[in-house]
Amino acid sequence: MQFIRFSDLCANGSVRGKRVFIRADLNVPQDAAGHITEDTRIRASVPCIQMALAAGAAVMVTSHLGRPTEGAFKPADSLAPVAARLGELLGQEVKLVTNWVDGVSVQAGQVVLLENCRVNVGEKKNNEALAQKMALLCDIFVHDAFGTAHRAEASTYGIAQFAPMACAGPLLAAEMDAIGKALASPKRPLVAIVAGSKVSTKLSILQALSSKVDGLIVGGGIANTFMLAAGLPIGKSLAEPALVGEAQAVMRAMQARAEKLGDVSIAVPIPTDVVCAKSFAPDAVATVKAAHEVADDDLILDIGPQTAAKLAARLMQAGTIVWNGPVGVFEFDAFAKGTETIARAIAASSAFSIAGGGDTLAAIAKYGIEQQVGYISTGGGAFLEVLEGKTLPAFEILQKRAIA
Image (cartoon, rainbow, N blue to C red; front, top):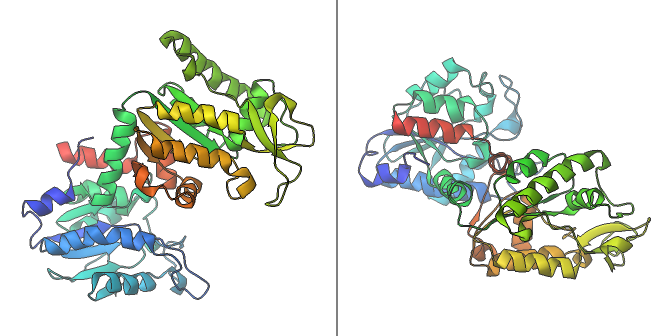
């Protein structure tokens, strides 16, 4: 992907003395008293801000927080706790500015935090007049919030249209590079793992990937629906019988590719063994069964060791791996072996791997393989839309501005 990198502008002196507007993702969780309970997103945004300061810029930063109502600001919507934490991390004052759309006073070497951008009327619908006002505030717009890259809003898309210059910050640039490497020009074989509770939430992803990948692994409740589609019993397991036809269509598409390329491993692998229980509970007794022996009162909560070993071997042969979703109920230790086997195979593989989605990141953290995954994507919805084959609005506008 062709786009302007903020790091390059800083390196060549183009930022000194300029007004830089950074759209960050500072949407952090808070407790009932408004205290920040986890600050990963704030810490992740610091390098871009430090880069701007070191380059001699006057820095403005904004973000959304929560789900405010446009034009109806409430104290709970305020970025005040974020400003305080950001100041601690930067080692300098970060002033919080309200009612900032019509003008902001900031000098080189200073950082100001512009109050919750989603309170501005017209933000979510990308109002052109609002976007133009935002663009007048800066000389350089920096998009550094991948979690919002799938939304065309005034502070993410509109401002990028009208700002004198628009570029990608280090976080967004890293996402764009990783996604391009994994999907636009992957080293083959390209293997995708798509797991989750429901086929319906990821059907379009499965359909899109079935024409691109060299291996499609399904897990979780999704795998149960595929087992139904293959004529296997699933007991009382979570599944979507109404989507068996769609699952079969994905299986046929992958099978057709397998036959065309003469590689049977491309076909969707259906579990040959599973781990069952009689109830959904952390202390439920786990029983490994052949896939065709699942009883009517069984719940399938994980793939079996034989299936996990086969999938791990497939991953070890991959050139690129895309991972979205654990293959079992990994939160319960008795039903976590399948996900752990997959995770450790990805970690051990020489393939370039990119992983995204909240549950996937939790599994990565649980098994301590952060350093062995090629790239960990921070945007849930944005990552899923990329897997669907959609062009994200942020990517689109930054590429347009790069060649304008």
